Image 1 (tube, rainbow, N blue to C red):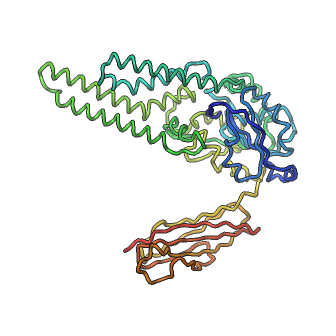
Image 2: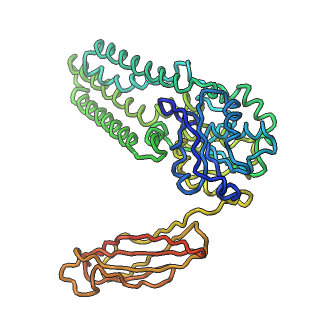
Image 3: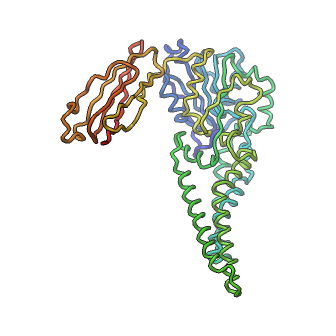
Length: 458
């Protein structure tokens, strides 16, 4: 299930595919979002295909959602569904055997439920926030007036924890959330006969996230792409706490070993401050990950390999699905990143689904900088479109970087040939070299890529 985006949005059905196009299987793809998602949930994938999206409120049961949305999908459609959307799609198939769904791809779907469905009304989030606040507050309390700081930190943790729990309770208040309980009646019914809930062609995509998934999920909150903001912030705070621990340990060392009563007291005090700062750094880097796994994911395992930060691997790629139908999204991908990953297209290209028509993609691979007089080689990387491809290379020197250089004319494009690779050696420097690659596929589709290479002086 997807992390909630608050407030919950009730969505309208958006059709970008005309009925005339519906006869072509490659165009007949329907994208279904997850819990509390919206029309932007699949924006990256939708930009590559002519398709339709269905939007729904997460308040009703999954069965009610499936029943209300099924009439909107096109006959012979290929469903691509993220998170809870996969359960909606499976319920559509169960309720309409031999119906309009030709193929299905589920991405990060909790086929066997999600532990997070237990969060509403549980107070779990409030408890977790309280522990995290205490981890950060402990060394600061020792440096300030302990009793006053304890009252203040308790108050902050109570307010923040209460508010966060209230937001979770509101976002997870729909009946569809109850349907994702691992022991709930809905999943028991759905999984009692798995074959009747999938079309003949289907795949389940799954991923696992690396450590610190709680920060990585926040980084990918808006658009499914990690921007690093929360990871950097967590690293900075952890660094501050490590520095605080070392500083307090140094001060303690100035007093430890002395025989007078005051020195022994200061030794104990600053050693306690050092330990509290160290515990805070440890909590940020490790303990909070354990808490997230335990309270949110429902597992004790702290490393990668067993969840995407929200749903366990064993639920995304369950034993009720043959492993030949599993596709791993590699590279440490969390639950929110799954929607923007190209593995969805990998599944769509499978022989028994065979969606084509992706736009031509072109990239220049090779060095970004090159010493003057040294031969550099760049390679054309083309994909999608309609192979085979033809290549056309050009290169140019940037005038403003040339100075007194009297070799090739600047700001003029020179023919680089039609091979899949381009090799060049530019004398003199420093200057900038512009590469331009135009690729054409067999159907006349064209795409151009450019690359700037810094030519450095010897």
